Length: 359
Image (tube, rainbow, N blue to C red; front, side):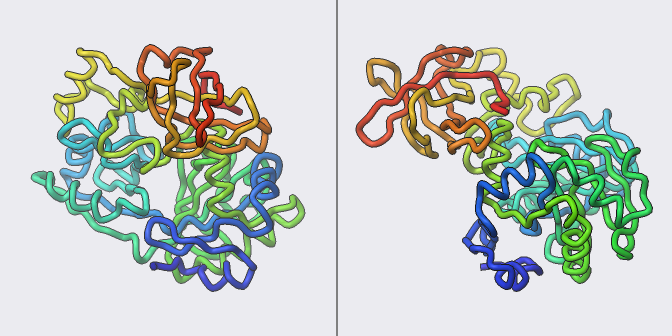
């Protein structure tokens, strides 16, 4: 198992550690519910240093990324970030990722932990452009400071004027006297906040400084458990659960990051053909109508008990106090208000398709 540079700190702080994407990661500290509400109402701090970072640079960097991703890089500008995906040749999703434009010949690319090598190899495979691709993952850490009090907490520690860094934009500055940290107004909790990219050797200093600066706001260190319930309440996809090599961005509701009019890119033909033909299944959000918690892999059936899909993510929503989930279902059952049933053991429990996000 890999460990992040903060592994010993998490253990010392009493975190419960679990294996995740090849790393030993904190799943919770004080408790999932307490951590979830800290992020929704105050501020929480996550170590997400298991995530991968690549650098794509050189005169052909933009052309390479434009060819291997689904979104349109022409809309990017310096200090702006873009959510996108890497499609495979069959139109499935190799990974979802964020691209940061440092300048028009230098792009910082953040990928999921389980896909670092796969993504790096895929991008290199198509590098017939004048670009250099580097894997920076082993030397970099990532902290996510999330919640309505994240701005006030972070502003204490940096000279950068964070009020000028809008959503999906970033700046590079000093933080807790550590230079050249990428401070990004992004995150996967839906409660606002920042992601901080920095060299491993400085991460403990910045972690401790953030916990100290956030003390007056009730900051808590948070684990992957709360990260999962937070992202699911917002209907955000988790790679490996809701999207993978076999799912099309059109089925997953990611048509908005799939720009078929931008020129050639990997998987474009397959995605265009599917769009023309029409999808047969769709990722939907649903709320349980009885007390029950849906889980990944549970079958979804119609009222006659015929299988029409499967649950990809599910939890008890801390905010709503009901079971919520995401599922792929046959298209005719995907409309909002549709009645579906989740099979939990031998029982068919009613659920209702709803518009995302849940919260």
